[in-house]
Image (cartoon, rainbow, N blue to C red; front, side, top):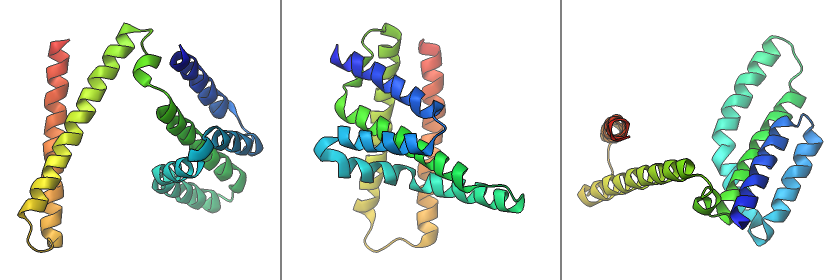
Length: 175
């Protein structure tokens, strides 16, 4: 029951963050979330920041360039956007850290089924990736050339793309 309640609060928190148009409220919400993280606050802060930094830099730079060219105000919007993304990410990190999602979704057979399919696929891909990296490490004597790295990345990407297509077809016909 605790996990279901926290799941409901998580969804409510996401709705509040998405509906908020005040940077002050989002900053306050981030502070509250860090307080909820208790002793893990620094770890959660770093983890959330690392998860969004490249995405936010790309979006921020793109919007900034367009806003400057069109001579529109940009500071408030960018602050609001970045705080919102940070709050959403931090909320999700806290939720995944403190809540057993299987118990939170146990009220619905359909959601539990989708969760189990998703997790099995995630673990399968994770294991395949680890196997690729171990195989690469065991066959290397010296550092790979840039060309060899690109070929390796291309072949791994091709494998995962083909695997995703195959798995989706298999699940489509299995359902």
